[in-house]
Image (cartoon, rainbow, N blue to C red; front, side, top):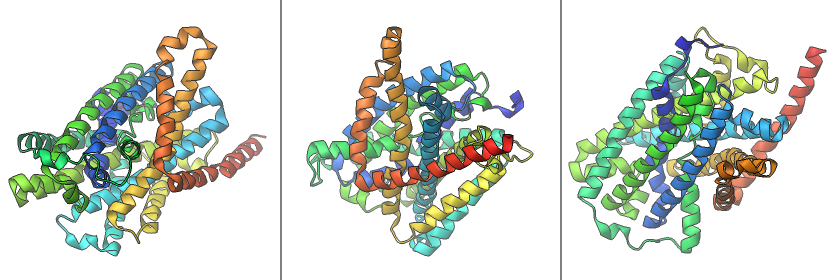
Amino acid sequence: MHNIENKIEFKESFTLVVGNMIGAGIFMLPISLSAFGSISILGWIISGIISICLASVFKKLSREYPGESGPFTYTKKYFGEFTAFLVVWGYWISILLLNASLAIAITSYSTVFLPILKNQYYNIFFSSFIIIIISTISLSGIKGIGRFQFYTALIKLIPLILIIFLGFLFMNVEYFYPINISNETDFRAITITTTLTFFAFLGLESATVPDNKVQNAKENVSKSTIYGVIFTFFVYLLSSIALFGLLSPEQIQHSNAPYADAGGIILGDYAKYIVAIFAIISALGCLNGWTLLQIELTKNLSKNNLFPKIFLKENANSIPSSGLVISNTIVILLIVINYSKDLSNIFTELILTSTFCALILYFLIAFGEILKIFENKKNLKSNFISIPLFLFLIWIFVGIGFNSILLGLALFSLSIPIYFYQKYYARNRKS
């Protein structure tokens, strides 16, 4: 049980949501989106509106089940323990993939200062070193994690606000045309870009995961969730429009650090370096927040006898240290496995698979809310929003692509023997 000294307040909870969304996504996604042109802005708008709808669902659920770990509790109430385990497993896998992509993004922006990091072997070492640094911060306890998240969230907004200001002041409208520069149809281009941009909203439920570590969870978690998503949506939309006004799609596509390059065009090389520093801090804060969720999920599963008890072992600061070491070792292995590809390609592939794994959680949450409508007609008004949300998520699955879905399903299948082993192990231990 956590006393008030070991809990975070609203501002840390809010910045956990904002910080987990505003990270590598907004700084690296333009590289992937540039292949489609300014039509990707429509992707941001669609994914942003749906993310706000999804946040409203999590807001409602956090009020219904305060003080409990969101993903596991919500899906268990709807579909039972086995399904809840599969969903949380997939969600955990998505975080591991995401954290690998974040470390790679930090390395990518660090090439502005250290060009040698473009070498595959050096970027593997550097990305792994980043994971170790964040692990050290995590071991300091929830208060240390919360403070780091709060300050990095504030700092990361500076370059985005700068780019928004510069972009609208020095905008070149010619960069927006033609709207679709890919070989795909407009509908297909919107589908793909919406899928990619939706990745940047993963983490909207972040405040619900360490729910028992938030003061006044019933109020603070729900407010953090909805306010955090709305705030982030406007930052994403405005900064993306501004970036397209400063750099051509071709310039973005061949950049390892597009926001840094955009700042450099207007303010010179020094601005380029400054923006790169902010981008690195942003991704570090994001990695910090996701690492907290990464270890809280496995700890929660261990409490329910669905994961090895080693993931419950805590240090003096009430942080599950063994789970942290094991999970971050897996993250480093994911980085090493992808060493043969360039930084931007690794990032794109990791985020598509990560998005698929996280989408399963959102999909079942929306489906569960729809089922409530048939259970009680009084739920019609409050749960109606889940119907268009459910349809949207089906559309997003289409945009992810066959390879990422196949890999995601393979990762999900690994959880089945683990579940039955844990159930058998737990039953024998009690008897």
